Length: 178
Image (cartoon, rainbow, N blue to C red; front, side, top):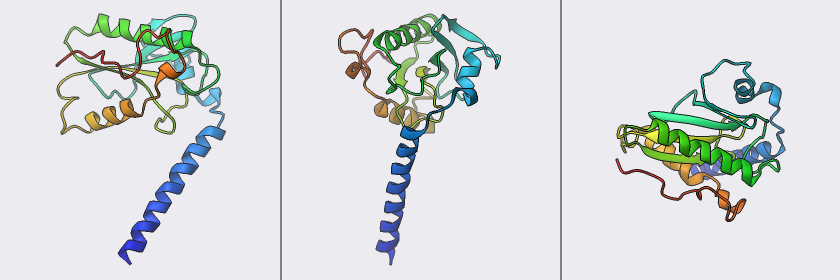
């Protein structure tokens, strides 16, 4: 009886995961309901740390580290796998992130830089997580630590899209020691 229950739970989990991925693939992620588009277009007021014709950077609404910026394109692009994503865009976003961390990271925080990978994201607008984490964020007793590690490990490898032209390759150690 217990084994049947466990098997049913496993199958339900697998089916749920498949449906969530399938839903993500079929979903067009409309721009009119997108909070990040609203921030980029100044419909929702938010302090921006960087703004150009293509990209904006602002504080994450729910930060996972002491410093947590989101670098997003102004144009509504669903995720890093979308056909609209170019190497130039990825490189520009990564450069803005590195500049922000260099200019605002006076406390020797550990850098974590990654794109969210479907279906492990809650906002369907391309964004680069740009984080400076302190010791409390990196504690194994903190939920944030495991969430950040998982997100970083699940992050797509942007070098597949941009072989030699990347500012840095994903999962390259750009971190400072705590």
